[in-house]
Length: 192
Image 1: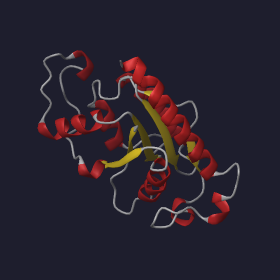
Image 2: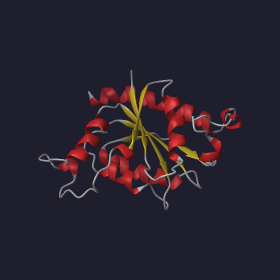
Image 3: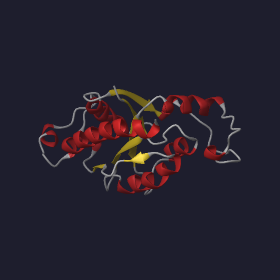
């Protein structure tokens, strides 16, 4: 069975990203084996290695980074759930991407963002950063424009009127997950 990680791309107190991630985990769990990777559980120093990880065959990552690298490598695909901060992704998420070398190589990533514009600029930033670590971002993305706090409850359940909208976030997430599983299976052959 395909193994998918849902990465929670924010660490601040009171974050709404938890609700969005819980909702995503429930949807992914219908189609694949799923695990939440909360960046709060992977505190790492800011990337400061003298050579890019992808070009350093002698790399010796510090233990905090190695823990993240080993965990990320376990999965066939990813869902990155992020808020938009100042027209971009969070610093902690960018750092978590910057320390990667080949853990996401030829693996698909679904993008789920939230913010005043649905996290559109965060998604745009991820589309620029992820190819740098060999990841394949899905063509579509989920831009959550409703207020997450009011739209999703603590158990990760989307409001009924949003669930029933054939063009709403539930339909979008379902499509994202189906595509992610297909891409994950297809890219296994690429990875050999």
